[in-house]
Image (cartoon, rainbow, N blue to C red):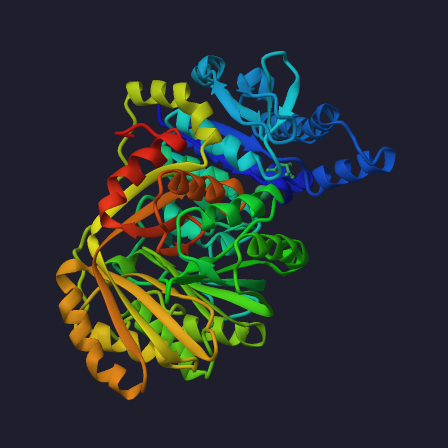
Length: 600
Ligand code: ASP
Ligand code: MG
């Protein structure tokens, strides 16, 4: 029989009435013919209350005892939920993490799943029970209780759905689903019907409240079909699946990070090892870095900019200044009061003009863009914080996200029509493989490394630092139907901006031709290009929170004397441009560094 996993968050089981409501959903699914596994969080603010209580006793509770304490929240919920199901006339049995057989490592308070034994659950399901599983918890090899980190019930639910080969994993929560942007800022924000795993991860700043990102990466790897649904109504919620619904819209959502600060190291020597030094120091100081940009060097020196959360600025500046001194950089410049606004959507891989449109809507409101970074499915701009709301609203209406089907005014729109909505059913071998790889899956930081040597780089320097420049440039490119891949704009120097971007090598000449006219209007501007570049992309989860990924990447490149020419980041990816001749070497070395097998 098909298995369905239903997860209920804290607010959805806060009191007896809500528990009854959740139980009746499980019973309804059972009566529709499903084998039902319910995963429950602690009620309401229970976990927070327990954390607070512990801190009333001691400032430094030991992690083992914290796990013992916190796991009780979920234990209470599963028992109550089982009772509620019994009242509705179905069989149910509650299980703790240990009883399910969720084996974890011993990292108390943020343990990783090593394996899950499905035997007992399968038997109970077969005997007609609804299985009520405690989320967020497991046991280590010594039977010590462990927890998976705050919000970890989502990960329990997705992992159970993966090992049980569930048809669907429903996440019941206190919102309608995933929205095109924060409805508090844009009242017209619309609930999205369907979103891809990658989009959900790139929208992390929006999605974070909705789901634990770790569980999305998990779902992506094992193709678990997820549906985020409201617990309080019959709303269909949002489906999180391999592909988004890009038949209807090019852009899926607008995300923003309000409090960013920018640090620029000016005049760094353009040689291998520089980035490694900087990022090793930041990582050692445990400072999470958000956007990282490096544009191509000029006159032998490079400028690197990165953003940090504003409250990390002080600490980051100490590190940046020390590093700058040791590398004999010319200067360190810090800017506060900035926000990052991003548009995310799979459509941009196949539609030209998305970047142009983004820059147009921002320019139309007279907002100056200070820094640009992109990934395949995301364009981020760094702007003044006072204009953040404006920019989010402008992007939202500019891409017509309030409408279910947007007719984005397109220039040279191409779509290869590639969509694959169906989810492959996992074979028994795959299930065995999932169980065997849970551990590596859970500890994964870097999931893929690719090299692309089919692109060329174009750099426009000496541009005025005014609103509307990026718009003009990318509108001209889009008008010629050229698809732009990576876009990097670093902080302006001496009132002059530099923008670099990459295009397919076969489009290079066309791109330069398209630019000729606009560049003539900017006196003193310069166009340079590099026909053969190597673009290395490192993707994974938590690149931002795992401060050492960047450090390891740059250390590995430096150890192999590979110079980094350009850097670009997103939530999901870290991209560097190096010389094409070194792309293979970089790939092999990085795959070894991050423990990826050649064909995974
Ligand atoms: N109860 C845990 C927490 O509050 C786990 C969860 O809700 O997912 O973080
Ligand atoms: Mg949660």
